[in-house]
Structure formats: C-alpha cells, structure tokens
Length: 200
Ligand code: MN3
Image 1: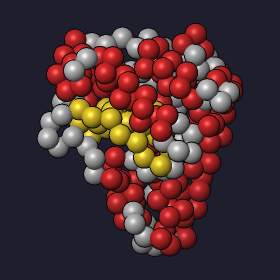
Image 2: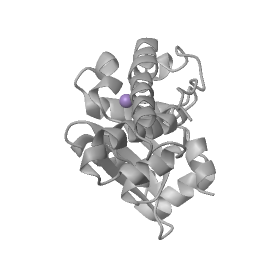
Image 3: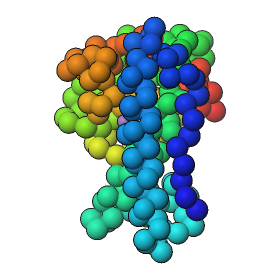
Image 4: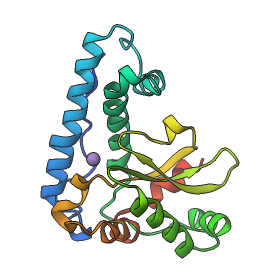
C-alpha cells in the first residue's frame, strides 16, 4: 500500500484573507507535505516490517526505535499534516456553543484557553506542533510535540486541533513572528466546528 497526498479541503487562495497566503499553502502542501509522503513511501517499499501497516500502525511501530527515527518522523508528519489542513477554515475562528462551554469549563475562560495554546505553540523550541486534545480524563488540554511527533504517539489524548509551528508554516506570511501566526490561527483560521465534532 502506498500513501498519497490528500487534496486540500479548500482552494489554495481561500485562506488568504484570514492570514495564510496561497504561496504558503502551495509550498506547504504541494512541496513539504508531498516530500513527507514520498519519503514515507520509499521507506515502506524497502522495509517489509512496514508493508501493509496503516499510517497509525507505522507510527506506533516506529516510535522509540532509534533506527526507525526517519520512518517515525515522516509518518508522523504525514499524519500531522492530514489533520492540519482540516484544522484550518476560510470561516475559522468562530467558536460553536458546545465547544465554548467545554473550554470555559476546563480552562476557566476562552482567553485562558487561547493563552494556554499560545504558550504551548511559542515555547516549542525549534520545529514542532501545538495541540488541543481531549485527555483520557475527559478534560481538554493543550500540549506540544517536537518535530514529527504528535499526541497519538505520546498517548496524550485525542487530537481536536493541531497547529504546525515549523518555520515553513509561517515564514512567508509572518516572517519570524511565530506569536502573531499563532494568534491569527486562533482568531481567524482555527476550524472550531471540526474540533467540536471531534469531541464526540
Ligand atoms: Mn508543515
């Protein structure tokens, strides 16, 4: 089985008014994400231990195996980006009622949630991701992971939203201003409808 690049769920220019340019999306989706898929398929072709496994099974199998770190990183990045494109919306930033109530219950306020997410995203040193997850205790929390890892690998909960904080995700539009990119995501791009649907 080989993996493939999923189509974007919107036109590449659709997020420009919300702070993510067509240039960023075309590079990020068409070049960066495609490169992870191509690399992953190359590893699967050469390693019979990986043949027939789902993406999630490959991530679990390669996790914590030093010799499979490149497999883990590329499989993780494929999984992370599949979620990331879905986590963005041309009509993002609008909190539906059920999710808003849950954020207030678990963080104290919507602003406290946003501050927590911003802290996770801006304190991830170097490349990585910030996440809103539903923990096994039923509570929402924010977390961060390095490079290609994710809450699926760390067992930190079910992903509701993920934000790529690798420089390639924001340098065209925000240069070195990661905090502005994160705030823009939370206020204008985040697909909170999807996050609410994933609450289950
Ligand atoms: Mn990326």
